[in-house]
Length: 369
Image 1 (cartoon, helix red, strand yellow):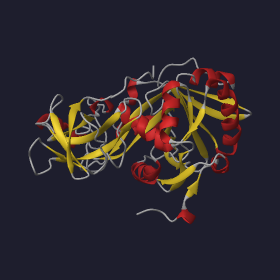
Image 2 (tube, rainbow, N blue to C red; image 1 turned 90 degrees about the horizontal axis):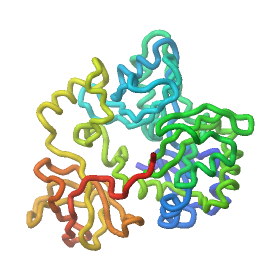
Image 3 (cartoon, rainbow, N blue to C red; image 1 turned 30 degrees about the vertical axis):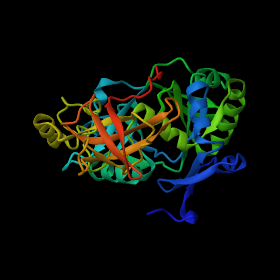
Image 4 (cartoon, rainbow, N blue to C red; image 1 turned 180 degrees about the horizontal axis):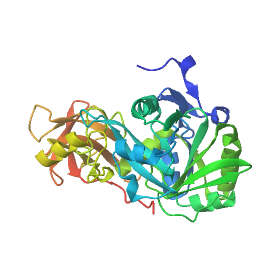
């Protein structure tokens, strides 16, 4: 059910989006820019030059206190012991009883006593609730969703733009630095959701406008364009990155979603551990796989997936779009394990059967490093 427009949250950059003529849409209870000049143009700019996204709808929560990192490690799926302070990690909040994905998020390890979490907008309250419910004495979990903005600078010229505004660019993938811009603290992390080299910047809401304006001005010589969440979706689909609520959910485990690399299998404890170990041992009944059109069909979420010549569908498309880079249809689906890479399936596209190859994502070679 959609949220009434009057009740939608807005980004600290909302007025700038309106001035740019952005088409707005609801995302996780927020009114956010879907596109400015067009999804394909914005997508192409990110792949060939550089784009600037406002993703302030993403959650922000801090877990702090003695042993905060150890507490996150004992609850979230990935192994924080693999990284040190100043590093970020993709991880999952799982349901302990089912192993389903409550949310996927980025954990920024500041110290043994503080971790910044960036969940998805619609799931922030639930992730915070679950962490608060079992937090040990002395550890607090604070929802800072409205206090900070998040900007994503993505594309081959991201370094040049970031350097031009005086922010650091010389650090490794999934590492971050805490610096200042125009007197305000900024977390600069080498990560993103597009497959391109880029950065995500967490900044106090009151300072977001100044940083946005500086990046836009510095990016003009490099072809920077503001990019909306429509392009963000086509870019992540080309990478095969899962979207919560479509490709992963409470009804989908990381084993099924092929996210086992984000699970600390050797850890003694994390939510859902016993269920996942059992599923891994027995083998899943379905796996998230890529679909690439043989003809002109464009996959869309919810489309039925059939084995060739079989009337009864075996799955539905979870994510699907036209790939502006490849100029063809690509998507994802949770397919029975009997269907593997190299096989073909048929999608019901507006009443006609279209053939798709089953492939391993990414569909486009990433250049994040």
